[in-house]
Image (tube, rainbow, N blue to C red):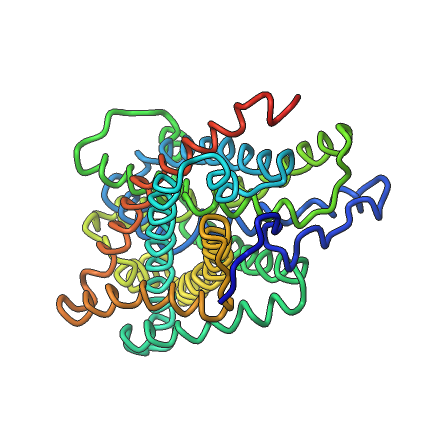
Length: 401
């Protein structure tokens, strides 16, 4: 454990390691900027999203697609502001908070950020454990314990540099995307009803609870810290033209990555609406129930296997980015750095304890409710990251043009 120097750069091990000036023009220059938003986007399709999307689709059909769309547009706006903070001010959100707000406020913001990261990790632990159980039959409790081992994955990835890490995450995102594309082709949804789902409608109290969970699962507080740091892995010039180019390319990066995440979330909700709501199985509120019913309802043994593989990929990819966010928050607020494996282990243990307690006391049946609850917690934490972010990027003196 060590103190971080006042002038220490965000994610110092990989800060400015991708030289965007190496390729003066063309596709290679554009591709040099692509990557940070994909690391961010995995948080928008983690197992917490699965639980809220499945419950929303199974209970209310296509009615909540518009909530997903609005959440995605909100996410694109906020992630663009986060990237702008990192590119223009060369500070991540935690560093910017520490430099402006008094210590008491900063400590409260730090605790809330850590709580949000723990809630996120809880969803990843449960999602991966359920995915392993569905694929192998291993008891979920053992799956929860095994997730501790992925602590070491980040250490391996960091050794190979940020670009290799981005490639690994993008490949997992591709697995998730192709799995659900295949699921949708098998499900054959009513496209007319899908289009109607994009029109906002009044929500019942139960639908509103799921909608709040969808917002919390889609717009995640830790991603605002993460994105403002990841854009600084690109080495750019300090002149206006270079900054404007970086802002433009990062917006494209965010738009493509977050639209991919929207497709995955919409696909999960549409799959649930087609396979469960339309067939009268409106009480399918658990990921395990969804997995079990996919084969008889869609008439393919491939469907449940793809579902489980995509769930494991979603949990694993989110694990990597959650650890990075924890490192950014701790270093930014406390100027404190601990070994990545220890940081990962602490975060994972905080998430495992409530998961083990729920499994031991209530059994596996309450896990999906715990997943949805973790996403509602995230939505309640969101304002404590969004308000400071808007405060910083609206400061014309600090942000310039």
